[in-house]
Image 1 (cartoon, rainbow, N blue to C red):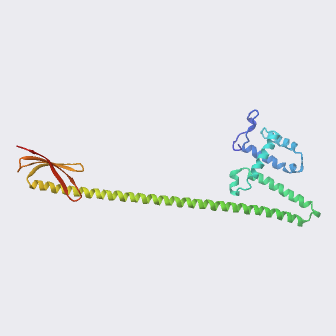
Image 2 (image 1 turned 180 degrees about the horizontal axis):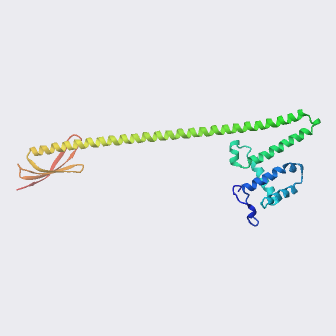
Length: 261
């Protein structure tokens, strides 16, 4: 990968081609830029790639002519693949985009000037027309890039807005469910306290009645129902009874009487 900061000249990897570092790639582009005009004027450029390889070795990068040529082709391919990418994202996708763009822009300008000079009498009017066409094409590309960037920005904004609305709806639903649950728990607690108060009042009334009827030593056990045990002073027996407390009354039955005498 191009992101590794390593001098490939110091790496012996046998048949495997060492990876290109960022600085090494920049050196290749610098040399290639200097010789670009010569490349355009020469059909057989094998010697030029040998020159580039020699210049790379002068900078301590041991690269053959074929390796330099292959790397250049890969860079050009990646540059052409950025045509549909918004300008603000190009550098993130291809960090050498600006360098390649400068090379091709300079090449285009040279070609336009050559074409203008080779025209009839090299009139300034012809040159102006060619430059105008070139400028118009550049402006059209910039407009298209801005429109694409604007559309993508609007798309991101709409998606973010939809996401926020969905999150707000979920939060409101959660708060509503939490409030309803708390209300149910509060109502359940109130009903439980009311039942407990009624139960205590009914049992207290029952105990007072038994005491008034001369039944003493009353014991109460409560486990959802209740049982009473006691001795009577007026009658020679011990009684055991049980009952159930409802919302408004106490029902109980004597189910065991043992005579004391």
